[in-house]
Length: 81
Length: 194
Image 1: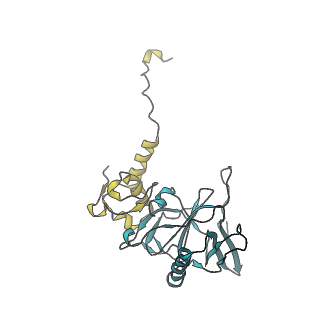
Image 2: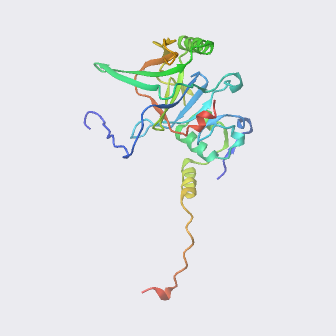
Image 3: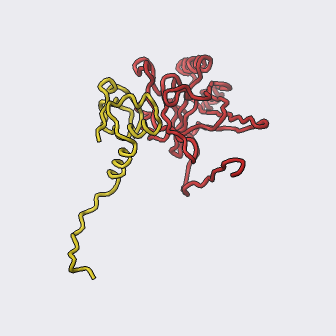
């Protein structure tokens, strides 16, 4: 899943996800991509060179929000009743 | 249901607070507000704010903070109707201390904006909610119906006694067809635009 900002948009100032810094100084493009796709705002969509689908972005966000669970030990078949 | 679609109002139980924490004014032509499409729950709050093409911070395209007297800022609205025609009168009132050339110049700028294009206002409530009034551009297009906020009815006094209030009570108001929309992001993103 590749999100890439256009070189020409790196100086663009957009307030989202808690800050308003030039895009070239940020890395939270996933949040901006979701906002752009949910709104269809052309001025946001045009800053992206490549953009995943909204479903992919939301799935990725959900995966990042979920706590990392330790891997459970494998249950051997002999333990089963 | 057969005539209209109503909605519940059930908020998550918890305390809230009155009053305004912060205020900004802005040239409504400088900023574009991004809003996701409405869903069955209704209109969505604004989720992003961007400078429009040609609007440069170095040339004055900024959010201008207002240092009002503490606990002396209030947002009010009044809804009224005649038949099916609905009106919302929005008003922001706050006190600026110390009559001065600075306040004179600030008023000149506000009055010019009121005459020419209206004043954009962002108000952060002490509840934490952030509301927008007077925005003109949404999702890179002219807003359906604009709300023009203008200074109207402000007053000032030098006071008489030394501990009397010396300053201006500013009133900025405008009529609209709906209540204000919220900005759902954190306040730091507005502060960054100052």
